[in-house]
Length: 502
Image (cartoon, rainbow, N blue to C red; front, side, top):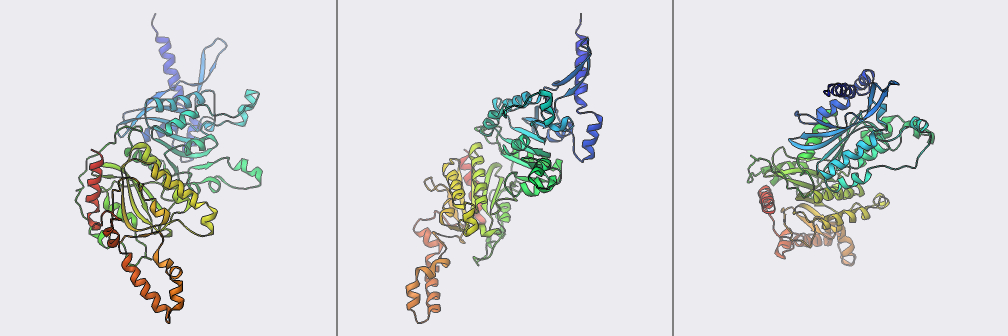
């Protein structure tokens, strides 16, 4: 009268699911230098286990009498685990089962995983390898018909982007819906040499007369530099570490309180290098990342998207233990000018900070929008205005530090000018509607043409304007709220964060 026979079958089915695509295909996965799905879940999550959901889903084979012969598991695994002690939904494609392509169980599991993240307000991590839910030509013959394309459950993907942190790790060749799932995230990573992403792979592209291999068509060198994917990892373990680090700065869901960590870095720490890091010569660049490292809690800076939109630095960091979003211009690339992709990067990062309630620290050295034919071709002004609109829509706490340049509309996008301006400038501040040096000859053309010695007259005019452009003149007119010693910036920022996080 006991249920032991059923429990024996349950154990048998669980054992079959753990075999994944079978010993041969698991070995083939390892030979490619790739972890299998269950190894990936173990590598990503804390050591206290993985509560799998739908582990019995798959396709069983039975005798004529209905006895189980064997069962091929679904190629999509998901369940609940923990990262840094906090619960998450973890999903993983199993490439050893039909190359990650769709099977009878995958759509329902995909939908339920996204629903779980949305309704329980849990971060979700997608580890993608293969089409990640796409179909295969062979399956159409089995079905006996084609179908009008649809993506069941995509509405939950959209909802999750509006409610919980979403991380995507591309861990192999990823095409079609798998590629879409990678992009539909707040943070995405590819593994150098291991991951490729395409709308369609080389075999399909060959029909267009293009001969490409996977890496040249969709490798990380392409997609981490065009904004499709945020970051490039050296190996799978590095990708897991990046995912864990990213999530450590965010709350579990939009509207949840931020998590403060213990901080042993003094709020009044002064870095002497800040006194001379900005050159007096305005044409010379400097290392903005050194400033970022000097201002925020030691070893707390996590930069994302370093290889694209390079004139903008986007990073998470901590101030006195509180997580913040950091925007900064990089004068080492195009002088910090906003290109179309730089503006797109700033927009997306601002929207992420707004969604999850992260205060923004903007370190400003913006000489304006990039100019020239290429800038016009890439719609720089449209992308720039979209970034400025995102900044003006944001209502999270916002502090700006004007390090050096702030010119034109792009410079005006340092913050919403209609809000209380929690802002300071360094003595190196240099701002205006346009750079004075570049407009003198035009503005004073008549005087220069009438002068006996135009060169001497130009020197006199520039000397007068140098006085006018002093940041202290702006402070006199209360056009900037305060000018501070650069070494005091960390203290000022820590006072800001503790004030707004009360």
